[in-house]
Length: 177
Picture 1: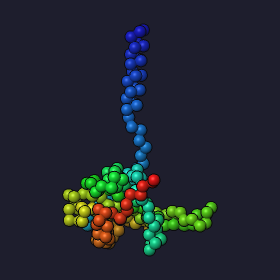
Picture 2 (picture 1 turned 180 degrees about the horizontal axis):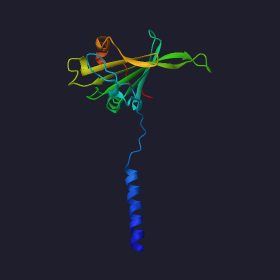
Picture 3 (picture 1 turned 180 degrees about the vertical axis):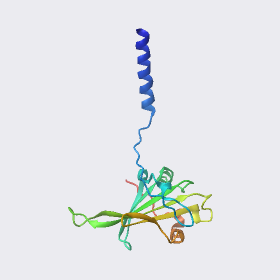
Picture 4 (picture 1 turned 60 degrees about the vertical axis):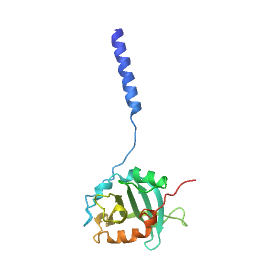
């Protein structure tokens, strides 16, 4: 009987140690549609875990009346937080929301509906001809469904050239002090 107790204690000890070493990380699958950008073949599925990215900033586009959240994968978040150049594998996602007045606090605006999800990925093999080696994708939401931006990414590249001094990224990390 003593050997049975010893085995039971040993098994409990092994189970406890193995469970305590596991990282219990909550994650969400975004369940995005299988859409591909024309010409550069970036697929929406490449950022299917974007809801697990960290916020690096927000901004409001007055010309589009759109609130935007800017998220980064771990690689881009670390670089942005440390004010370093974005390394290979960096992914930055921009979610554009329409706005509405808050029902319970009328002077304020809040996010209403997603208008678009855009992202950029740093990949020197696939996008060696693009400035900064960034590839761009835009998926626009209309009538409850997403579709690939049919105009391609030429405008993305032209516009992001304005942010050359910040690694072709407009948003700078917004630190909480």
